[in-house]
Length: 283
Image (cartoon, rainbow, N blue to C red; front, side, top):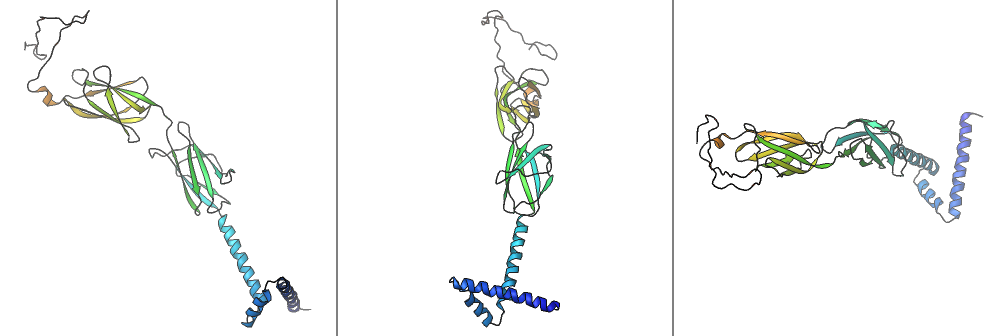
């Protein structure tokens, strides 16, 4: 018996089983034979058409399953709340069922990527990030294709304190009062620093300890100034202000009070003489 005869016999057996199955469904009230008769009336053999349709459906299902569980790449965007890139960040991940997703390692830096196998497209992966000195970050990623971006933002874990500033005249060293002092923090928020208990002392309530801040100073008799400072608990930052040239010209009024050093009571009838600091001449 030749190969062609063997194949023909095998095909005939399959075709007989096909029509037997069709008769079975027809006996159960499912009009399969009617559909077969309609197809064959069009000159199309029903059995080969059915086999072809099954192959197409299986191929489509295989393609769908393969595409749904392909390898995907996730790029980590690891930055602090000021947009600064972070490194040595511990990252972990779980899927929607709460099972761990292997990342290959635990420590990552900004811009680094990882390839995940068997991740379904459309599925969700929850990432967590930890770094010493920062509040933990979290990001939920819905896988949309082969390239994905995980945005993990981490805020510095710092304490708020009362920052202390001292302003003095750069020429005389005298404290400078009645100044407007504004501190701009690294997150662009601003804090107005209020006058402290002594002249020239200012307190900035609610600044971040160790954080870099820009301090702007405005006052009528001194040049506008800006300084950069990092506040620390119990530390006083001293800044010198340059007097305006106009402040040294023209007439001015001076109020002098004489008090007893022991009782701090005013002394009546005291004689006061004022001398020029440059030539010691009596004014």
